[in-house]
Amino acid sequence: MLEAFQYGFMQRALVAGIMIAIICSAIGTFIVLKRLSMIGDGLAHISLGGIALGLFFGVYPVVSALIFSVLSALGINYLRRARIYGDLAIAIFFSAGLAVAVVILSLARGFNVDLFSYLFGSILTVNETDLTIILGLGILTLGTVYIFYKELFYITFDETTARASGIPVEKLNTLLIVLTAVTVVISLKIVGVLLVSSLLAVPVATSLQISRSFRGTMLSSMIFAIFSVVLGLIISFYFNLAPGGAIVLTSITLLLITIIYKNFKFRS
Image (cartoon, rainbow, N blue to C red; front, side, top):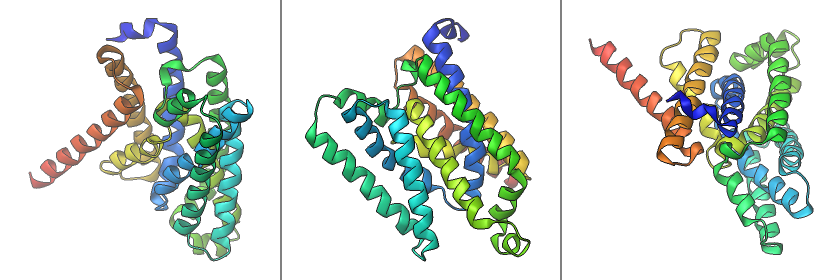
């Protein structure tokens, strides 16, 4: 089965996929436990506007999507602080991002194929530039999580006590949502706009079924995510399936198996 990875494009896909799996699990653990799972889906659709703008103006789509998504993430956080509910703030920017994409699509129809690849992912077409960006931003994201791990852990479970302890809760929330935006954008090549939130949430949900600590949840979700990426790539290669869909379906299958096993063990 591993002979599939003798090809250069599969090797690049594997490296990019493993990096994305690790990043999504690290960030996903925080946002899932903060009950912000849908923010990944919202930012993914918002980034579609940035991708369309990049394709229209001849800018590398990942760069334009990153700028667009980070600015939108900051806007969402600003609206949350302005006493607008978080889900409403996400919905506002969600609509704005899709509207920008639709308007750009109506102006230029020459990049429909490129846009399609970002909708559903195209991990097998990851090139050296994509890989460099994914690894660079991935290391930066993981490094930031490592530096602020204790503070992020604190605000995930008790913002009130964290604020009373002098921890800058609002700044850390802003940091977390920006890191989520970065994670979403660099994951687009792997699973696409329509599936990226699954890679953020499903491995964490699987891990929560068996883990008893926060650190254990994060580490085991990384293992589940990496396994899903590797097996999904192998399945897509041999059965000629869409890699993004195969990865997500593998991840969901692992979740279902874990839930069934847990329930069976509990009844026993």
